[in-house]
Length: 68
Image 1 (tube, rainbow, N blue to C red):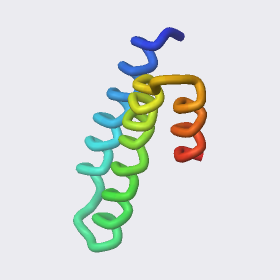
Image 2 (tube, rainbow, N blue to C red):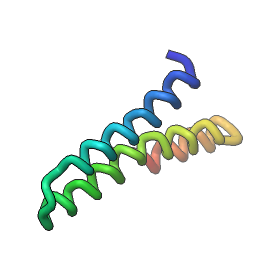
Image 3 (cartoon, one colour):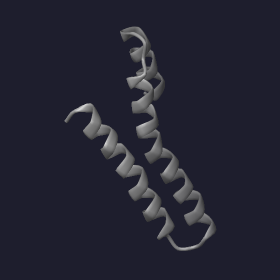
Image 4 (cartoon, rainbow, N blue to C red):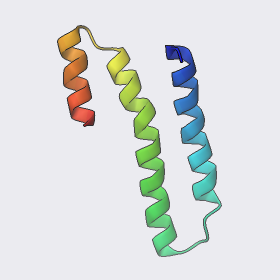
């Protein structure tokens, strides 16, 4: 898998999770879990983009440690 394919997959993941969260029943707990689910799934793409913008190997490793 190359970089463009991975970027597209992470974007699709965020959109699919958003649709799934919209389909959850309307309740307080579903809203809380749905928001958390959306945040955690969209952070995958955000962290990947941050790593791609790294200026050096050391910077890339630092960004990956933040994700970890």
